[in-house]
Length: 426
Image (cartoon, rainbow, N blue to C red; front, side, top):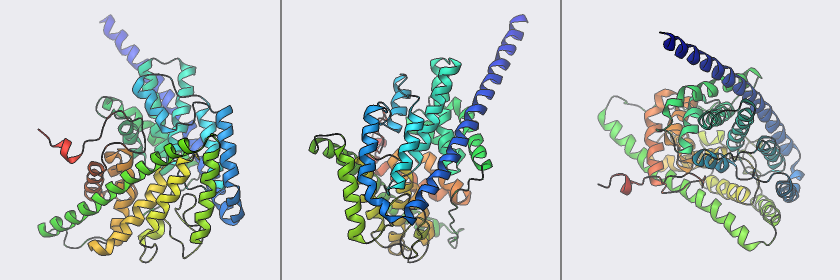
């Protein structure tokens, strides 16, 4: 009886400790993400209002490269650093990662680089969690759990999709099954961080699918629409694979071609300027969620008839691959949203699917395939657009995932993705 009471006492004290720890982590991460989103919006608006800032992009890239070399060593691998840390059980996440990536991403967007924000948010959450680990002297297992909680908190807060954030943290590291028992604290951290972020009056982008396909109760309809979604998903998967290979290939090319580490962002910035003025469009700079130019494509306009061109997705693909491969900082998710939504819009008429439906599917499926997170992508689609569309997102995300081949945007993911051939081989 005494041992039972001791067990209950220890369990309660452990539970209370983790509840307090996760609350602190989520509150800090949600607040930092709220500040980050506010400053990111300010940087984006400033870039719109002062187009000449684009000419500073090459020099801003040089500055970031020099700062990374002198002060940010170990902080430039991004999400790959977190994945390596958790897979190898080594403390690789430096405390300086959060302020470094926070500052570097804002600089990238202020001067017009084409990048996202998810990578930054995940790294901020993971770095804050690592700082907490040092303070509270956690065990190796406790440390791994807290970093996963920090990653989910960052992702959930930056997009307003806490359930997707929890699955993303587990899925991107490749430990969904082995650490599924940790799902509750990871989800708690993501939900609380999202709530804290919203308490700071941060408003997330609202995406909508308003076209409800007719005849939902017919077998013929289901067979037809899922066949068409499957065809689109194959192209989404191939697009995500091409993006990952282009980004990694360009990075290797810069390293071989250029003798000095600061030359790749210099050349990358010059290429972005050249492409911008060659196309006579600033639509492919920055996040690309909205655009003050009524004629310029954006993620929001991909859901509207005539809002984007047949090749808008390709130009965003090129701008983002150059930006990220040459050393500028930021995430991949929002540019992949742009690429996927615009590619979906380009396929809508050919496949005979509602424009907003296939744009939404492309937005999520290209991201899910590129990051090896089809389950998180499915849940994100449901959180963003409505759970009534979950079957469509499930179909698009998993087919795109299978068709995107091995690898992805994160080179440190330790397992190979199954292709259709490998998945169903005896």
